[in-house]
Structure formats: structure tokens, C-alpha cells
Image (cartoon, rainbow, N blue to C red; front, side, top):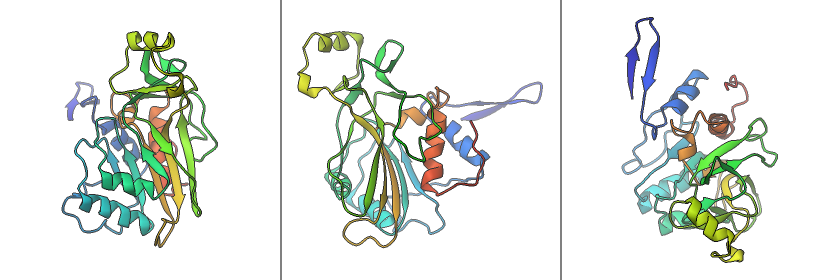
Length: 257
């Protein structure tokens, strides 16, 4: 992004719609700082990190990167992982989530009932289960999110499906259009494919098979909802910042809206 100084002394930030500058500026305003972690060469996560976030990666993780994240979480780390449908989930990463009874699905979710405007792939979420992340969050919009699945519940693990779509939702492998939505409504898609889809999970507890301290993890099937282009939409920014605050165990910094 670049800063442009106006004649009245005001500063305008110009940035790519796909960047996360708005989220970065907001968490900096409440006292956080961020720095890059090169997971391809790192052997451990620095001890002073409140949490590790990976928002919208495009290249698959190597086995060593998956091990880095797993070891960090098993040692009591905090992870914020947002994966758009374009992100290839490696077998090793899927196995890591499998330890928690979770699956990362393919494709993108369309919701004929709750969506922004006439675009069924911009899923609107008006209601949430009780959780510290979502207690003060109003409606959010998720552009073309991928589905997640909570396959089973495990001892010593508390998992909450933070974001769910309507019972008429379905998954397709390409971007949603009104034509595909109309086709689905007249029976072109099997009825069994319809049902609520999970778009975000909050998980905490002791990592199975040798966890040392309580960990926290937020997994979202969309990073796009938190990017510059969608951060100002409805309560998207509130949700993204609330995820950061919950992971860090932060109850003291001011809530900016």
C-alpha cells in the first residue's frame, strides 16, 4: 500500500482490495504489532508471539511447515488460519486437522437464502452460536467461502462451529452465479447436497497425543472476508479483530468498531 498526504494534512491509505492493511492497522490501533515468520526456514515460533496468523495463503505447506504449526499448537500456541478455496490443503495439513476431528473441504459455498444482494456466493451470516468471538458481532459476509467440517468431538477439546449457513446451502466447485443458483432450485443438484455448511471453527483444549498446554485455534474457510475490500462490510472487521483478541486471550484492549 502507499500513503498519500492531502493538502489539509489528512493521510489517505491506498491499498489493494486483497491485502489486509485495514486489519493490520486496526490491531495496531489497539496495541498489537506484527512481523513476518518465514515458516519455510523457521525451526520454532518465537516465544514472544501472542499468536501466529496465516491469512489467505496460495501455496501448499511443506511437511516441515505443517510440523512447525502442529508443534506450536501442541505446546500451547494460538493459530489463526484463514483458507480460501484456492488454497491446496496437503495430506499432512489435513491429517493435522484430523487430529482435532476437523476436515477442510473443497469448493465454495452458495447460500440461496442468506446472501448479499443477488450474489449467492457472497454468503451472509446473521446469527451465531454463543461464543466470546461472536457475542458482539452483527451480520457478516463471506465471499465464496470453502466449507469446513466438524467430523467428531474429542475428549479435552472444545470445538465451536462459529459460522454456519442456511439449510438450503450447497457446495460447488466453481464460482456461484445466478444461473447455477436457478438450476439448483429446480432440482439440478441432488437434495442431499443441501444443508448448513460450517465456515469457521474455534477450537481449544489439549492437543491430542502429547499436547503440553492449552492451545487455541480459529480456522476459517475464507480469508477474503478480512481483506481490505471486505473488512468494512457490515461486521466483517469486528469479527476478524475479535478472532485475534480471543486467540491472544485479550480482554483488556479497547474494542474499536
